[in-house]
Length: 155
Image (cartoon, rainbow, N blue to C red; front, side, top):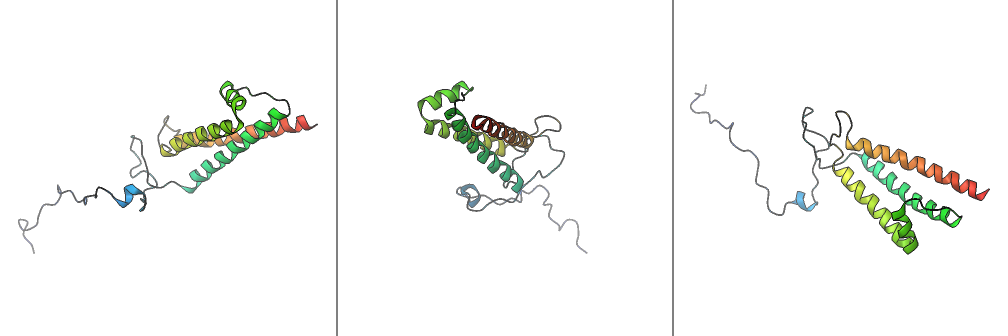
């Protein structure tokens, strides 16, 4: 039996190894493993190393729907419609490629920020990821409405 004096007290020792200045994790070559919170009762924003597949699918679908929105908007304008958003109207009058570039850039920037903060609680039960699902639903309704307008213009 070992005596209590012979056993070292390691409770206060930091067991983490030093991270080099250029770590494979920081460069992005080696990815982390954390996909959710470590503790369920934590109130601070939680950031993860990897994102779930359904979140990435949501982001890709929003980008596709945003591209379709730009395409259908231009088709509606050709058939006699008018752009209600004054900022986008100025871009369309200036250049169609500038309109598409700015629209997709703003959408992708917003999605990057929403994806980074997807676990942040907005209220007691609503997280940022729920906002992304709402955006996806809104874009789906918008595309349906634009298809309806194009059908009316063709008739």
